[in-house]
Image (cartoon, rainbow, N blue to C red; front, top):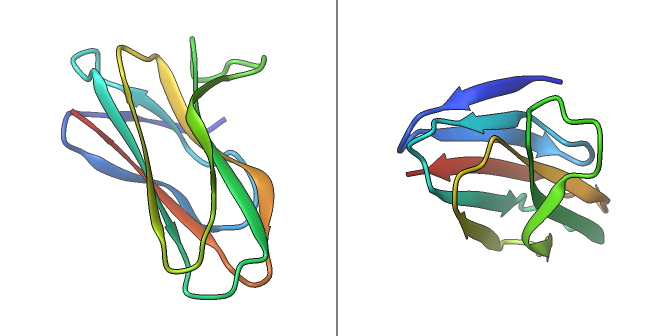
Length: 112
């Protein structure tokens, strides 16, 4: 599984015009306690699509990842954000329901 280290204030793209998949895993610096998952839906029509912000005890964790916040339903021309607090070892934004109808999701991580 691909992962990248994240420093404070560093905005990292973890899903790039995606329709399915778990994307890139973020390993936040130990000093980061405030996390944001920023979700952008493309300008195309979207008939379905949901994203879950998740965390795990390690980047290569093979079990069920913990849900952070609530599952987000993609909406055309809408920016969504999930915020959570506390130390985390690994974070991802998984497309839990495939994005269909022509739309795509781009997702960023930002921690401070």
